Figure 1 (tube, rainbow, N blue to C red):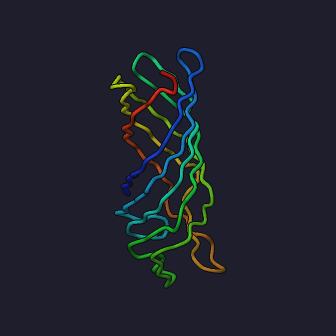
Figure 2 (cartoon, helix red, strand yellow):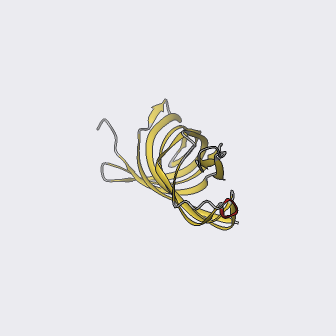
Figure 3 (spheres, rainbow, N blue to C red):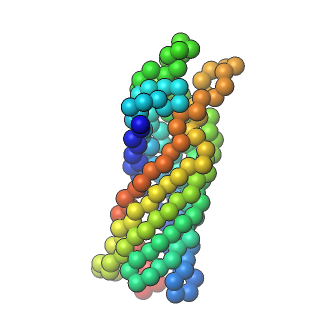
Length: 166
């Protein structure tokens, strides 16, 4: 089995359409980490990388509760750092590898609560992210790219929403 966690920060803009519906584009920066007790692709150990995620969430609001679903693009930033035995059977040892997955696509589900606090609102959200493609690394020239893992993560978002008009 494998465990993973995400740590990040981001900005979003909530654009309402009437009373209950809206759209929420944003930009998020995540530090992604996975620890494998079993195999991750052809490897044992832990891996981490950074990504820039661009979600487009369609929202429904009911009283103080918000629900959303929408696609996102995930763009890896930098290299994938690896700690463990990587492709030991091929005699290849890599600590930092280029990520072959240029852009990943995924789907995000969220539910949250907001409460008035000062001029704006305090937000508490739970978001589940589901990548459609596995994260791949470039092994070596002439070798096939190696599928490492498919990111799936449960996030706890804490935020503060400011109105654009007072």
